[in-house]
Length: 387
Image (cartoon, rainbow, N blue to C red):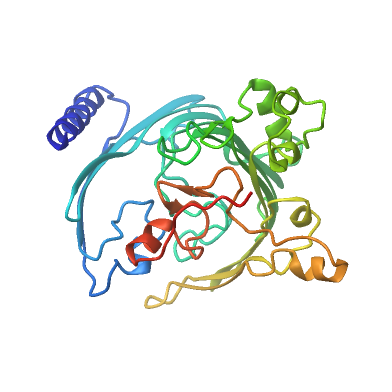
């Protein structure tokens, strides 16, 4: 099986190289790298593994071999139509051998609209791109998920605003791993950002993310809502009433399905960027919500706060960042005042018992530790039903 994986990887990889050679109007970028990780503990060091898109083994000693070929959009010619593609193969050695297609993608752009599909390492959120602990809900901690995305992926001026108001946003459909607790579960994601400032040295922006795990086949209750009509309900995060066809067909199903279809997560992102001659400053704040209490700001103590300073004239110190993350309130400070409510229990769900993870790695902030790391150090991560 291993030999077949390696042979298949090499065949596809060299096929990309040969076919890409004839793309005369594209500059090809190649990479070939190796990474060696060693530790005296029971697992690899936390930050050696975290925010590496699931490439580094959690075992204390491992070697990563990586090879890829990529093209990029032509940013100089400003073509109305453009395309790019890439293939990234990794082979991880940690006592076992595992060859994987880490990235494979095709992107097509027309004017400011981009359609892309495949596995792509994505940077989502307004956190610092180099030193951050990671975005609150999407951090680059887990392996890229197969997705199809369409949208305006870069800030684009809004007509009639002279560039002082810009917008970006996208809509995605993705697939979770095959061996998740709920089989064939899907990802829904959409986001929108507005930025004001244009040519001014000060920019402010606001973004809104909505994620949902939905669909699939549960080993406990069978098929979960998976139709296109159900997708429209998921899209709006609408509460399902007693007239729902699914509820009528499944009258004994526990209450969470009759509350919202799927596991919903969201975040509001606020940011302020200031550019001066000695340095540029970025201030950002990301909230988290998983139900109405979060939507109503009952968990304001929770979130990610960050300050990033990029120095322009100090050679020995380029970037300084301070971040503060809290996830302990979970709306309970409000609930205690009202003598009602339960903890928000972030990244967990009563049906999608793998929680907000992909291939055993937390999709959001790695500071909510991944099951893969916990298993490696001997923590019991057996899935337990909470209904």
